[in-house]
Image (cartoon, rainbow, N blue to C red):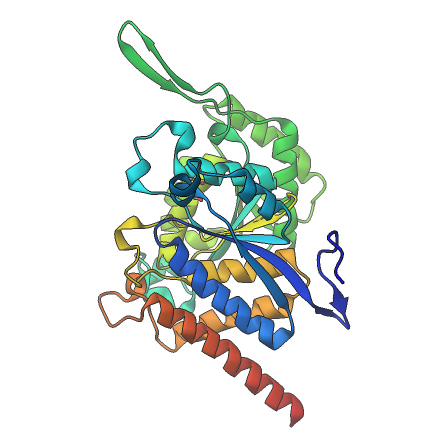
Length: 383
Ligand code: IPM
Ligand code: MG
């Protein structure tokens, strides 16, 4: 019998059990998460991992069913899991409702409830997708590969006071951008440690020429850097970074930045790699890891079986990497995505007007690649 406090049971190095909550969310969310679940089941069969998967409501889906974008029950089931895999949140029909009831509030609140403050967004060019990038080949090069570490629980997304007021018939909306030293320190440590495992270069991105928040951010990062003498630190303004991402993307190894700058820069980074649909993310540092593609709910293409599930499937790989011991299964998923792209299969967003496969077909192709890779591996082991 598994005890409730037991995260996973290890038998001869194998994870026997991992409890995952899937939050499908809105728009294309259900389609893309269902492909990721298929892929998890495939690696589960190969690597003897039993995934216990529960589903819970968030966003517009939850508003329709429970009149709130994040029911308490969803928080409870997520907190009782080893990891949470999320599709996407956002529905245009709720654009005009009270701000605290919007679908996006569900996403912000689950991020807060799970406590992960470091959102890792790797931007890696798959070589076979280089022609889907809007950048000229001589600018893109062939090894664009950097990691954005976005602070996820602070700044203007959560700062108080916020709201609207009206003076003499003139309405005003306002938000507060703020950071404490400890909030900056904890995410900076994650970024420096990530840089140590990569090419040991860290760009801390701020707007210290204008904002107090950014000056405190910069001072704090400089202090944290003393513990990582092997990492080369530079400071860049966010506007210059936006420009450098499209003029010299290979400049970057790890980018550390605050919540809103990270939101904006990661969308920019994603299209360099061919499509917003390709990029995964992992949110770590809290009680339970949260894994989600970086794109939105794409309501314009929802239900058409044309969305790209790769970002979500790659997020499932990150989930195994960061919330389980099972690195081999994570690598198997990543290799399978790469193989399917190398074989020339494309979803509509990366097909450049050519032939494309559906969401479901892409999921099935990745499952097939995982199965074939594992068969050829065990054959070569028995030879
Ligand atoms: C993201 C998204 C979200 C964010 C939205 C949907 C609230 O854009 O994950 O990047 O701004 O964080
Ligand atoms: Mg975003």
